[in-house]
Length: 227
Image (cartoon, rainbow, N blue to C red; front, side, top):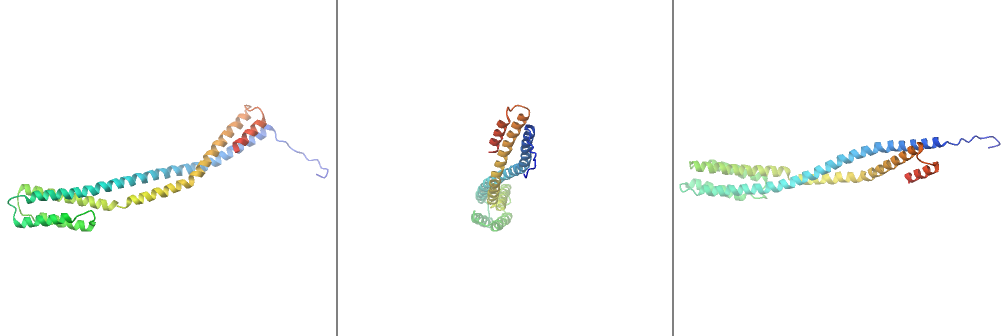
């Protein structure tokens, strides 16, 4: 430069190696922080997704159980009502009540609304209380019929409370899975880079300790790490 003497400082081997080591440490620290955040988020999302699927399957199974249970209980009530009508000394008024109760049980189908079902069950309970035949066996049958219809209604109430929740759990699963897919590529990239820089760091630290013979060999190895 216009005749002026310019001093060019050449980095020593030790300085070059220390610079590369510092670079690897910097990248490892930077990438590790982000990786840990994403890793924790992925763990949480996976747990939530697994829970959503488990809850969905549980609801589907419970819905099937409740539907079958309710119909079985009403069927049992019909059979018990038949036993009640078989008494020889039953009076016409009681027989009329029994037929009316049976008509109510027949009306209860899977398509019956919960409000209508409650009304029918209340009506059945009221009519059972009006049966006048005062016998121990009769009273026992009446209590059994009431227990069956009350339990059947309780099953219908529970069924109504969970119906549709399987879809909500399913929608939640797909939303969580979508979030996972969004962060998975970055998570994988960071994992690969951290592993690469960790290998590079060890290589250069070994170089600093004299395990790598030449500086050129070490430089070539670092370029491979960064590829």
